[in-house]
Length: 220
Image (cartoon, rainbow, N blue to C red):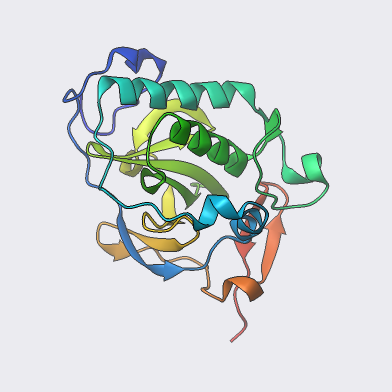
């Protein structure tokens, strides 16, 4: 199989060594934590304070891959897409879904399920991207020795990160689940409107159409 191929439900028979590795994401400096994740961490401190040793990318075996494919498809089927405002009456609430949720809720559920399957939190990283239309979106990056794969609620197909068509902005640090780092593409920092400000005072405005918070630029 070539790098970047879509791994959907038909990849149950995939075996270790059957795909070439894709270049991993290049991460940069520490950056601001999304306000929704900040509030989630306050409500669920164990999710964001436990430090795990980073032993490097997950080694992919047939069993590991089947689990990743199955979890991605199962969560995509079991959660009905609804905006935070529809579910909670407010914007930008990150929470485990109870049958309903938006993109980051799918991500949290997939991350929790894969941790239960034995994958390390250091290789299951919540990631913020921008879609081609400029809308914010959250996906789960699974860091492996075959490259960084993206689990997305918009598709059951699993792709290498550089084959998604998204602009990658930032993701959780592999060293600490409560910290976030910038992402570089082809060695260059992504240029975005995100402004790094202290987490406790970071201002934000919500985009109701996509259910995502867009960091509010600081006036200069």
